[in-house]
Image (tube, rainbow, N blue to C red; front, side):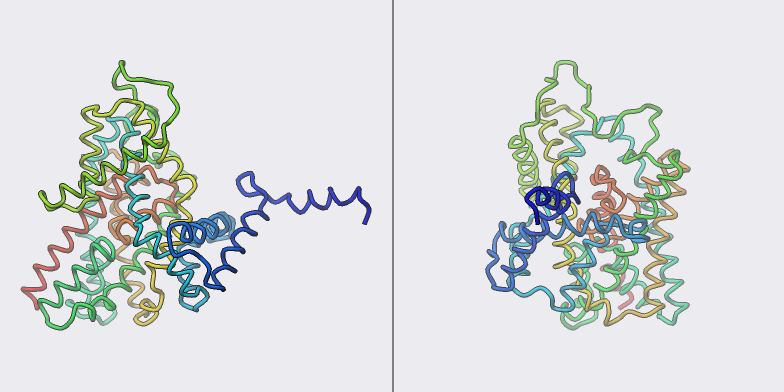
Length: 437
């Protein structure tokens, strides 16, 4: 081989690029991490966890967005969620790799940092007019959607031979309960108290419906995104309410003329703002008895309404939001797939009737959100996305659903749908099961 041909071959080898980076580089670095896992050498801390999920997320996310059919029903989000779950089921990842991700996602609670960033950054970054209009109007489609979903779910389940009790408490309610930590676990405790036995025995019966519902919601989000692409008049691009103007949901607001403008984001200030509001929410949780994620939404809304922070601080929080939403969503989905989507539980109970019932519950939320939202002056695609988040896996599901639809700026509204809808469902089910037994 002549010296002249070597640079050309090297250039050709590096030609495939990923976000401006030669593709071979993330492949090689991710391979190093995976090999380290084989030798039990991945640090069981935040660094090791990030090395695993970021590498796999960078590769699987863009791949999912390029696959035929898959790219139209969830794309990278669906691939990043389900591929690790499948690999865990078949034992591809060893304990060292899983422990490193566990340390990041659960012990360091990186998931809550991501959700909190999306909530605070998007609320502080949106115009007050859009925020108020969205908060007022999300409740009608959410309430009507829940009523219809419960009715349809019970009816379809009974057509497939499930009794009313099983259909309501073990299929419909887990889907609408707000996830595993906020829904399935408290439900299992309530069921054990009402019917006897250990709560752990009920968890395995509740999780499959929640997971299947979440997968259907992600696919639905991908389809809604395609509908929005083809019919732009139905799509607000992350804006819920038709305001009659062209305000960008995340454009710097000009509500006050004396605010500083034109400054670059101070990312440290942004992180401090986001984390401090979550700490404040956690502290207030003991006094007002609402979950910290819900309180973070309320605190952020109050701060936005009363201009508590100067423009420079809002810009800094929004700057952190843009980094997380732009580069870390697919990696987070990898972590969720590895730890929060136990495929074995789904396989144990799956049947045609079971899957169809779960699908009917979620599609009811989708359709009601779409048409009720349209009737009250909301963008149907965005209203449907927020409504269907009520049938996802809590904060985990919100990230996945909004990622599949490329609507991360809807996170505050999605969290309201998930948290308040989930809490209402859990309380109602816990009370009702004591009556019905």
